[in-house]
Image (cartoon, rainbow, N blue to C red; front, side, top):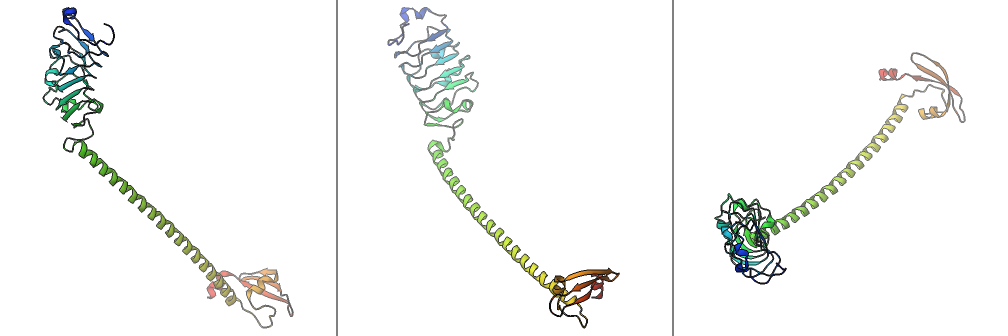
Length: 285
């Protein structure tokens, strides 16, 4: 046939005699009159997509007991999809009805034992709940039907498409608010942690300085308290004076070491200094 047919397929011209016809493809034409398929009971593949067919299902399609592939998409078919007459077809594998004007509730009374696995009714005017036996189909098989609900679509029939959308918006707003609160709490926590660490560090440094100062004062007092001067020693008055003077080791004994210390300054001279061992000083205390 030439491309872009615009008239009906006339049975008297010959096709009605093709009782053994297996494949009929009339895709991508401009046919508008219904094709009566009752003359071709042995059809297995029927392609009528992208035409201008109107009205309900093509006459005779429910009698095609050997049909495998049925493509009626992108036409102007209307009315209800009579799935209760299509699912009994034992060999039907593909049913493509997208981009038409079918209405009604989707196939609630159809048999769940149908052999159909390639199914598409998107972009129609269907409404109601998708039956369980069709929930295995992808969401794209039902897209473009604003009033359809249930699996595999993303909203249940209890909420409906509009209510579910509103609920999602409320959840989105609540989620944003929770994220803001968490971020604010985290920021406050970081500020408090940094402040606390600075306070502890400052306190530790101050305590160390105080402890060092006290230790130095204590050592100075111990040195002053432990020094014993005999009559006639001149030129020094505290241990620090001895430490600054030059000293010469004279000998060591069980008690301690003896040094000769030369005291600088006027009236100075050489003196003998006995440094008592640490354990003897502690024992004496």
